[in-house]
Amino acid sequence: MKGNRELQVCVLVVLVGALLLFVAGGRDWVVRTGPSSGLPGLQAQREVLTAGSQEAVRALALAGVTAVGALLASRRWGRIVVGALLLAVGLAAGAVAVAGGRGSAWSYVALMGGVLLVLAGGLAAGRGRRWAALSGRYDAPAAQAARPPARPEVAAWDALDRGEDPTALDPGPDVSDPRPTLGA
Image 1 (cartoon, rainbow, N blue to C red):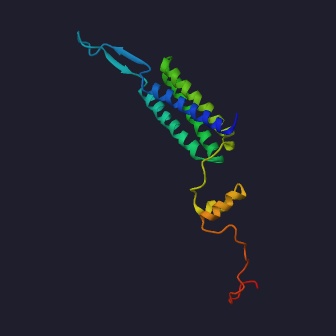
Image 2 (image 1 turned 180 degrees about the horizontal axis):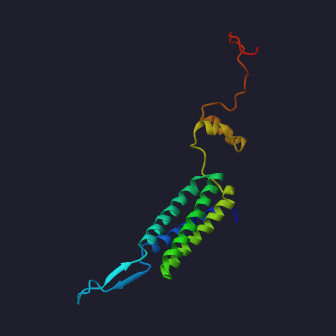
Image 3 (image 1 turned 180 degrees about the vertical axis):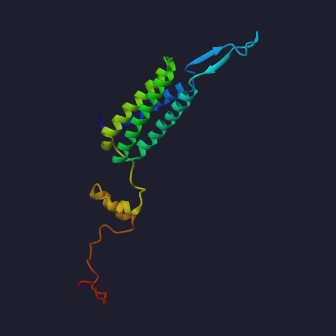
């Protein structure tokens, strides 16, 4: 699989996993109903036992969506870090789903979302350094100067952008300057 295709697949898997977590986090996983206060004719009380798990799953879903932006904006080592964080988020989502679900169908949906985040995190951590990155055109000038041009024709265009004439020959040091130079 080529680098751009892998990045697209990884982003899609993260978005699907986060969507599963978000949907599962919005549902009641385990509900217990019982008599209200013992008075006849009153509605039964409804108690959601997994509210804390649901909030944690929604928070982890937001972390997964945030990781998409980080995957697209980062380069090389940054993608390894984002992949490791996605692994951690996926494992945490799986642990919350197993601990809070007690056999609920929505806990299995959350578990599947966590598994998808783990898979995407492993892909990003293992192969993310090879993927294409955003252009460095808007980087700070010092960072641009430190980076060698990819091709000579690109260097010529960059020189034009800086206001230099790339066709002018380098005249060397200015010998008409009467001031002494260090080391001369």
